[in-house]
Length: 365
Image (cartoon, rainbow, N blue to C red; front, side, top):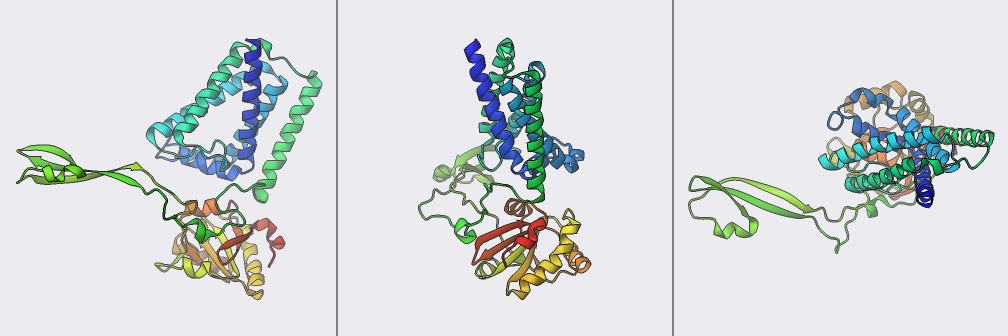
């Protein structure tokens, strides 16, 4: 039992630290996942949505702290029961998500390691088993250092995590795991290879035969009795097929798609605000001077948002912005960038630079 406990201690501690650090690299992305869970379609806790970012930061820092505490044997009972309660909570979330197919990616490892809903649930069940082993063999979890040293280690971990969270929220993730990282060719990212597997569907047709409703597959249509009355058709997707890394990306204005022409621009700056109502007012104020500087340097500058035209017109007027906005799916814009507003520089569809609005002065124009 002692050896099994120590192996479980190492496994759980390292996994919690890695999981927490990956999400701490991009707490905004994790907060978007929490917003999905809090929505009326999932847990129906909409009053928590405004606090999603704060909760995301607290949860990911807690993950790292608990992992570190387990490894060094800090406050054994508190650590073990906190791990148990946290994994119970996440196991419930991932099961709910998988069973009802509500949230397609739990965000357990951010964008670094995407997991299917059932994959996330399986991971949590495995972790739960290891944590139960730790509770059973808790007597073998002893401190690695003196109490004062352990206190210092935990304080240092807390301070480092807090600084990391502050930094990435005021700049950008230290490591970009998303499909829109620097160097990405957006148009190529949307291509579907000719030999890529296609989505497969099963079609069922329902007919009234002699007063009874009967089902026929698409392969049985030739066997439908004469005089039967068609009722309805149902399609079921058997497999999703190939999904390109970049999808749902478009640049629309006045009902027209301008993606192809804008992606051909050699010097293009995107100022992205997925939701102008939630955009940082200070950031929008600085976008006027930044955009003018880019225009002087022969860049075409456009805004991208999922907001309404009414909100777009008001924002342009209020902040005297010298560029027009194009619309795109809000989730896609959240994926491209985390800051609101943020800056993306492209050369013929290739992302050459991404910056938080705080770092606008460091953009190479």
